[in-house]
Image (cartoon, rainbow, N blue to C red; front, side, top):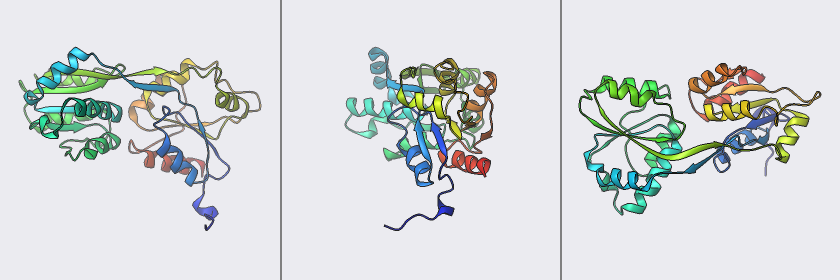
Length: 265
């Protein structure tokens, strides 16, 4: 097998921390390692399916009544379709509902089910999606289903309600902090530090802040640059007083890696 040349491995010798949940970091690790990075897994959060059965049955029974189905995260879309497939054996049970999403990763989950994404804002945040929905058509009395998690902000739902839409929320997953106090990888991070740490969600930022004692760097450890995947994550970092050394221009892994490379260069 031919060796990858140094110019194609610009992160060779660099320690890069990823903070994605376990089981959701394979693509991140693969892309960074292909560039030569020594990847350190610090899963600051864990995401698990969590829903009220009565609410889920009620939503599935009335799926045909909704005009819009809105996903704000890939986790929400993935867990929704897992339960949808348990309840129905035909994708046509979705009826004529239109689908709107936040983020390319979320759109990819929808497309995996051979469904079209009708609306996706260029900036991957709930405010932009609400704006697009409201500008696209009158939402007066339109029924909208928003699939969420336990930590999702109410911004999207509030704006749709202001536009006189009839909005139902379906919480289908929960996000929780992981305890890294006894994690050997966290111990390695405390001792040696890193060149950069990548944040992909406000919840990961909050967990990093909450676990400051467990992640406190030693005197000789390398102090990492902090990178954000987008505006909402950046806002969370600033609110908690964490530095934002670089930010992706688009809310995607590729854009975040580009920003990382530019900063380290």
